[in-house]
Length: 87
Image 1 (spheres, rainbow, N blue to C red):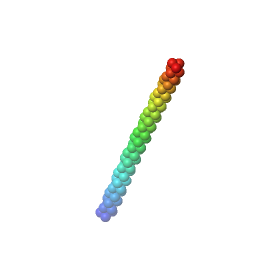
Image 2 (image 1 turned 90 degrees about the horizontal axis):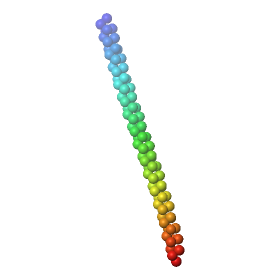
Image 3 (image 1 turned 135 degrees about the vertical axis):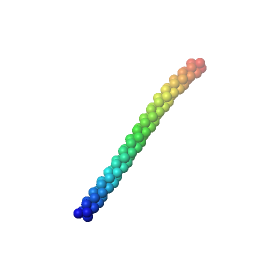
Image 4 (image 1 turned 30 degrees about the horizontal axis):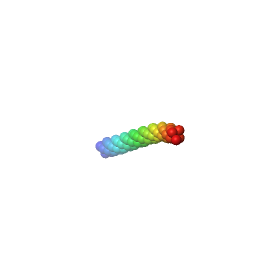
């Protein structure tokens, strides 16, 4: 009878230890998955922000350069016609 009780206690302890180890492993894996997902989301957000900033800077530079070209062209035409009329 005592042997049966000891065997049952050992089996229960082993099962409890295995369940605890598996639960800890699953929890650790879940934490790793959550950390990986958070890192991926942060990286994606940073990349999107960088792309948006680059696009905005390029558009602003293009607008400024276009306006400068227009101004320089108008001034050049005005100077040309000024010099032609004075000759």
